[in-house]
Image 1 (cartoon, rainbow, N blue to C red):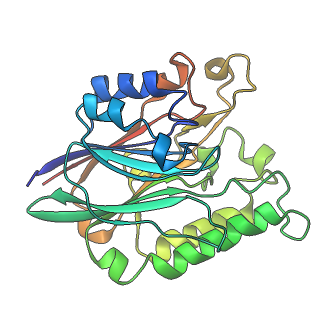
Image 2 (cartoon, rainbow, N blue to C red):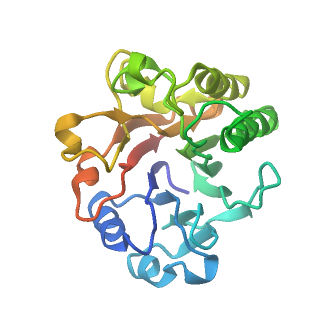
Length: 269
């Protein structure tokens, strides 16, 4: 049973289109487990062969054609695979697995939360209502027994909760992903389960921290108008085991990149 573990989470924005940079990440970072979101392909078309060739023989997927989709690939065995549906929408937005760690296992949740559309008003924008309802279901589930055990929750949660998680708090207060109704609900989900924001444990609250930069910027790095939409949470029993969490910013500049950068989390006992 490993006593060290590296988990990477990455919204890849089409796994088949961006397989070359996925392979680059696997070769350079060598994570034990990679959690992908927005894979955008049905299970039958997932590029399992490429992952197996790279040494990631254990694969758990929950995909659908053209939209959404999550996948967890690993060097280590994956057990007790669970795919949970939210809001009775039929979307592929979650997968959970058990990963061996420290003589036992940790529960690893991989999420792709709805983006919520453009208008932060559920009365005129059903997508925003869907997002809020999704978080409400997360809150009802991800507490109690789910967080009394060693557990990690990663993924594109599509909320930048704190002022330093966006390039301009004032400019984005009415923009979906940073509105008060979203950030309050997001924190309510996290705090209700006792989840620990691993990324902010290692980056001071006043320091800017982004994982996403729009494709619209001519020079994304120079403009640096980012948001922290991707997250790593750990349950209280893993509080002492999380040793680091960092954004691989350089990956946003790789050839044919995703608009998200990977987040690397390190665990050891």
